Length: 633
Image (cartoon, rainbow, N blue to C red; front, side, top):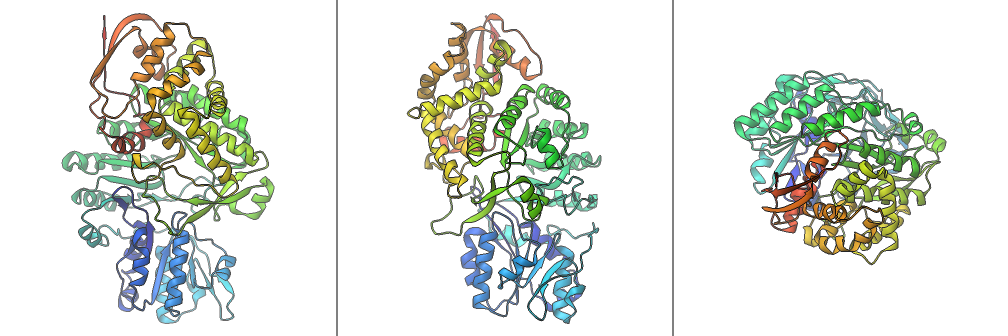
């Protein structure tokens, strides 16, 4: 069984999907009697070696996702060539649920549709007992004439699946790979009540089924006993159920007692509620929160109608931002670029409205990918919205650089719709990178907030003017990296560009474009601020306020090894911005004060800074100093 994952700076996810399927299948007496389960294949860098090590396998099953699907197909073809009688099974989110896919890929024998535990087990039993394959639920196979056939389909409602952790399926992996930090995935429930057209989750599995709390609590104890630092919960809408509070209480109790897990990351319910706030308040208190999700995907009514999505009200979002900010709880908001009905203007407006509501620390821009098993994947939906895609190379950011000659993963990237041309798509991407890099990472955050609060200059106006300035000044530090990314995006819109940024100065891993841009600018921050002074002066801020605000902006930027220093101001910037983050509209007063930076969590070199501050800290606005003391003169 293979679930191929990338490695992240010495860390890798345990292969939860195939572990779960194996744990269920090997409880069946027929499977136990007739099949011998070999060690899992899970590391991408070892796959060629793993395939070569096979010794006349009877069956190989692949769990396919967008980040491993091409390598899965390559391995499967090689196995079939070496062992023609070996049965090849494909399942997972990226495996198309279509007869056409099976017909075009003769080396694949069976496709498992949807959740895999029960269909895969039934298939193993049917192959052993030579039963009618149509009696196996939720699979695609070939009939006697070689034609692809879909078996009977049924909803899966079970919740009593055995845990791969508790059944010991990962113990040997952890014992063997002593130099690797493992990430762990758990589920507390399955299913999603929403039916967003771009997603293949709720479209097929809209009934939410809860796993037993006894199993979940035991898994949390298992994780702590093995000193796992990072726990990811794969629920679609954590916090949608009241019992989720109890699960978090258990995690915190175990962390307090053992020190593990260190971080807990989840997908929170689409429309955030009081339960989610209380969960994040508790996690934040114990240093475990990875940020609360306050997402929209789009703020355009047209787009929301097209994707069958409803959002919380903008008023409610503003209230939540004030609540979270006043409690020093980090949040992040997601938008998806490329949804049908979106335009450059509507997306620009959405970015501005998120900032106006107080979302300054973390906006995540996700690209819209065409998922074959979603409603958007249907031909009639594509035709209706004139969706055009290109094969975009997929490489998971923050993972090790792909080796030369390695298999490249691709996924259909939406680059054009009836309302957004490819040129508009590139322009919208670039504006988004401006907001993420210069505002959320903090390079211009204080300037933009001051201009909005005191000069009524909308955020989208400020960053659009910056966008045009960058285009006109490609010789500057920021203009140079902006121009390089622009060229990659143009190529990407034609299906040729790279989708990650690299610089060995920041480690041997890949970065999203906005993080790469920020790192390059931060590395040359002195030159950067000298070059952009002329741009900032266009907004006619009176001197000496301008000079002091520029100094404050520069000094509050967290840089490697820069801590334990102080500076004096004639304006009370610290209280002014603190009140704005809490949802107020204060005046900026003249009052002499000293700001002392006592932030002890500042790495001393650029590689460590890139990982700990930019990667780990982007959802909490960690690129700006937080360890601050203020004294009035």
